[in-house]
Image (cartoon, rainbow, N blue to C red; front, side, top):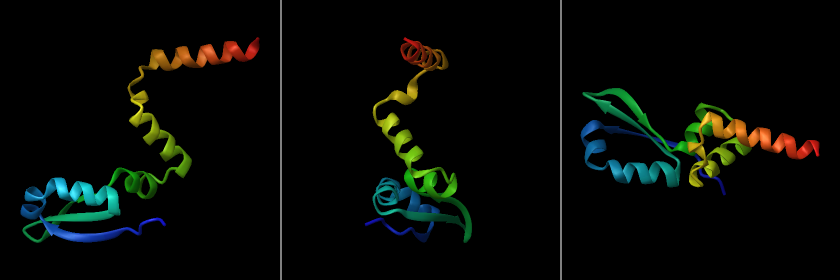
Length: 95
């Protein structure tokens, strides 16, 4: 079952003292936090999956591929390494 996003308004002091907890809940429970300072909303804390799915609006498969690549540390490839992989693949298909 997919979690529904909920938004909770919190003040900056609360966010500062419970930042680790907020990160965990944002990721695990898809909770969005609007952080206010002196009663004025300033920033939003939300999980990466929520951000990619709802803010960037990328295809679910693309989001899963990106997150998987990050977990496998494949997101650290240089442009040269990527070009090499593409060239190698293309050469293997021509044979």
